[in-house]
Figure (tube, rainbow, N blue to C red):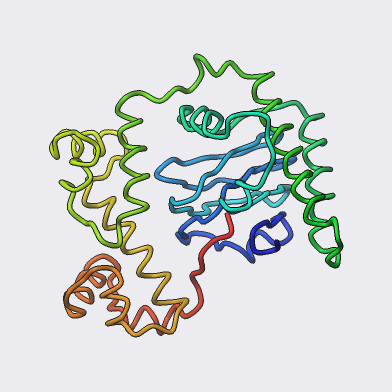
Length: 284
């Protein structure tokens, strides 16, 4: 259960993620900020969370922590997809997921009383996580998680008008769909035409839209994913550079080395030596 669920606080935040480093996000997370501010980039969106904010984060995008204030008090409840599927809800999970995704920013301000409630629930979750295994411990954790999700969604539904606030434009939706596809296929597919075909638009239309929304070309976005993944594999695994090259669908390790150096200023061997174990897959 500890691998499927983690409670990250201001006390151990920097043990999970480092300032200024990009990580592939692996979990669905709920950020609850009680005090202070935290700024990060998630899928090209710069987000600054402040007091009494909650934020929903989804997996398969890259996360980069930019800044945290000295007075930050934060709880991040991070759970993997398999665990989320085990939760018992009386609502359609897909409807809720699509509902949250339809809001271009998943950042919401809620009353202090609800933040306090979520805070207490997080603490109870944490206590049950560190308990020795008991007959009902998993059931207790699953039910507590369900209460957390219900409480967060109920607060958002009560204090925000989702029918008019923050709905994605068609162009934003196209870029979001592109990023979702990219997160699944970037290791094997690097051609913009592949994603355009999947999204049933022309390559030019997709390229122009990505540039307008993100400020980067489609190729730059694709390359950013490949470079970030390359850095993680080089620094956190014992794989040979040739193995990493083939895993990322480079037919020639020499071409991979040139590609990597062009984008980072270092060849893979130099980067590996300098950054060993400095990059990890983030828990959020």
